[in-house]
Every structure is written in C-alpha cells, then in structure tokens.
Image 1 (cartoon, helix red, strand yellow):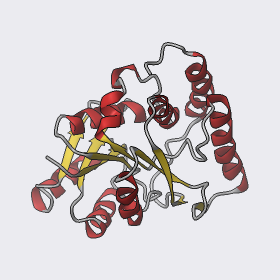
Image 2: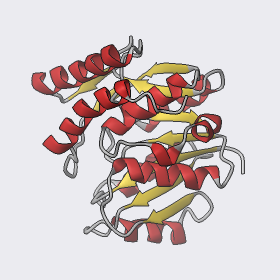
Image 3: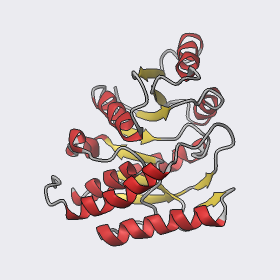
Image 4: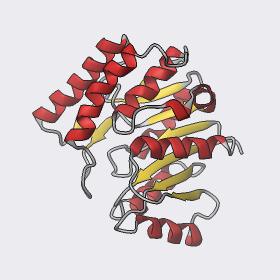
Length: 239
C-alpha cells in the first residue's frame, strides 16, 4: 500500500476530531488517517467508529488502546501499524487544530527530497497565534536548550507536526525509544539526525487549541528537560 498516512493520537478529542477529519480530507483527499485513541472517557473512539462506517471506510482507521499510556507510545504504536502496511510517508499530527492541514502539501513536496520534514514555528514564514509571552519564551527556550545540548542546528525541536519517510522509522529501533511525553519529539529527531538522514524544516503557523484541554503538565515538562541530557550522555543510542 503506497501513499501517506497521518497518525493522530487522541484522548478526549470528541469536540475536535470530526471537523478536523473533514478538513484533512477536503485538503488532501488521498490521505489515509490512523487515530490512536487511549480509550478516551469522552468516547472519542465512538465518533471514529461511526465515521468509518458512514463516510471513510477506505481511508480512516482506528487503533484503540486500553487506557492512557502517553503520547510517545501512541506514536510508536502508530508507526508500527504504518510500517506493517507499507506506507511511504508517515505523518505525526495533533488532534486540536493547532496543526493546520493546509500545510500537508508543503510537507509532501519537501519529503520528496528529504527524509524527515519538521513543521517549524521558528524559521522564516513560521510563527504562533494566541500564545502569551511566557509560553513563547518557554517554547523558544526549550528548542534552544535542546539544540545546544544535542549539537543540532534545527530551529524547532519540540514541535509535533512531522513527516517521516518510512526508511527513517525502519532505521530507528522504535522499541528503544525512551521518551513518552513531549521529549519524544526531540528524541525522534535526534535519532534521525544521528543516523545521517536529511532533515528539513518547513514553516508552519501554530495556533493554540480552541476546544478541549491541553495535555501539557509539569511532569511532561520536567521529563523533556532531563531527557535531553540523557540523550546527550547515553553513548548506547544506536547510530
């Protein structure tokens, strides 16, 4: 099965997911989408099951997990699902409209000549909407912190709008990924860089969610701070 798959983890995204899928398919009719739902208490998975039956049986899929197990493990499960089905390009995308489907064509154009494409808020043409000064400072500071310690030149290491060539995911030992919160994004990009893959940043404007509740927490933030040093110091990471 050639083509591209968009992986969207969900946990209590019932208010967003149907409208987001409509926008994705209107923007990119060829897209296949995999929803990885962690048994959402608001029954997001029921919305997906209904949509599969009624509208999108050939291009929408659901991977329902037993409970909330974290962002990183959701993407790992999605990556393995995609690799088992021979998709050529595999996206990461949020369910809360912060990642605008209008950029999908830019990602697909860039991944034709690169191995990993990052949606970047901090290159020319990128930006954020509806963020306060503190959040802007934390986000920019987090990327600066990570790229300084890890020796990377990339501007936006913490974003979660990405497109991988399948070869990148095949080359990374997915079972050895250590991160499960937002540091997962840093670790995946760092691993791809260490493998020598071509990484490109395409500009996106990130808009803060308008419905639902953010999954960010102090625990997730601290995990990211510590994980950067673990990645830097761990000489056992496969190259």
